[in-house]
Length: 258
Image (cartoon, rainbow, N blue to C red; front, side, top):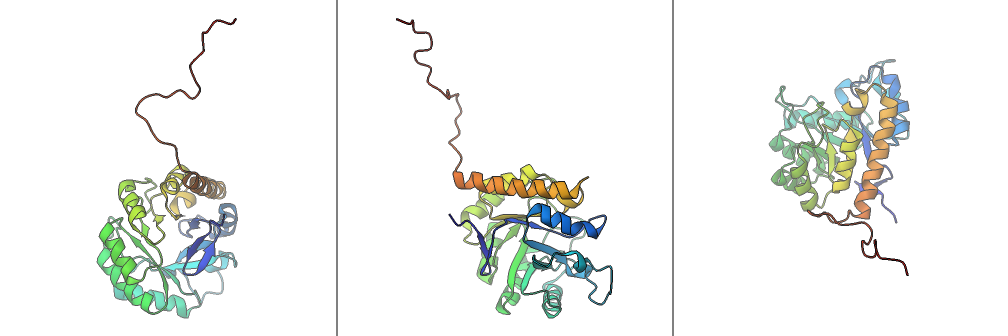
């Protein structure tokens, strides 16, 4: 059975996306990428100094990975469009993760501005993956605007609080024809596994790996968890019951032998 994830015409064997922020040393990124098995890696374009001869985060991104630049730092659709175009002009490809956030306290995505920039960039041929609140109507608007996937948050960025929006994400998974990639808030592999068991197409993890005591080992754990969750989803969980049900027949337990 071919169970690869397809986004923008590209087929992926791994359903774990990883980030490049918050590492104590960017030199860890290649080992984290290898341990995770991820094929897609996101980087904030504002962290990229294309003119720097050394010390550029891009120097640590394995060449075989698909780059997903993001518009972190954009507060309006216009700013996000400029960042996306700059990324493409700099040779970062046509994939773009949209982040439009104007509230610096809660760091929640602006659905209206995100929809505007998605429509503009999709028409320009970008493969647009918008970060969003798990709102049904925003997701539908993004799909109509040309998004290649939707990326609802599990919890606010950087909190490691897990699937606080679980019920809303479940609605999106049920409703959307696009891949639903759970982004932000996943701090433990078990949380990523749960998202995949629910039917999420993929998970993106940054802080949960980068802030752990051993990022390489944690990356491996997240990779295993995403694969396990996907297998469980495909297998289909058994029905739940409110009363006990014996795993083996109870009849004949104390019958006398002839």
